Length: 331
Ligand SMILES: [Zn+2]
Ligand SMILES: [Zn+2]
Image (cartoon, rainbow, N blue to C red):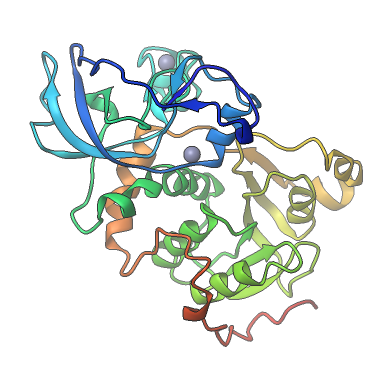
């Protein structure tokens, strides 16, 4: 499916075309795609809010098998199952790359944004930017781990959470519902507080099912302050609210590729005294590095019953859990 021009998604700008099978260059592998996740970022690419290099084949949560290899490939052999994520390449030489911050490389190329991705039968990638997929995941289970999972893992890493500290999650969608499972696995003594929009009962129920210690609405004041928080929303109000209920010296990480303009007025509520003073920090998570994907996939495989699907629509299988009363809602 090729995107040749940006347009509202209702106009169906993705076009089915027959293209030649790409050839892997030196150190590249040709991957036969078996599953590719669909991301909200692609909606932004299709509708022009995030500039992609047109024409482009979208898709950056790719699982498939190595079909052929270019010269000098040593990490993979034919038929190996691999995953490809948002980071497709970086220069490897600049000051960012040398420090492991290849996500900030000026030559960073995004899969399905700067180079062709996975809405296709075949795609090529440098062997250093492909990851083995742990056996326990099916192709479809693994695909969303490559975006929502890996970027969520990066955001969690950037919070500097220590075991026992309180983590807040604002917004509870595709990425957050994986992050809570990592946090509960890796930081066993850390309470996790989840904030959703009012009326998002499905999200709140799922948060409870996945082990949230407190579930409330953005704007609520929990009984204890957050040592760190991740904002997964496209809005500004949750950022202000996260800073308000943040402990001294805490950090809020924004995990969003862009913010919506419509709720910009919320920023006028930002008060130095209430939201930033006492060494509170605000940081953003941009793209991912190879380290994020390669650490996250085996970690995810360790988590018993990790749920990489967002199973709304099967509401009947959820029961609202008896949430821990350690942190009753509100003061
Ligand atoms: Zn994505
Ligand atoms: Zn670089």
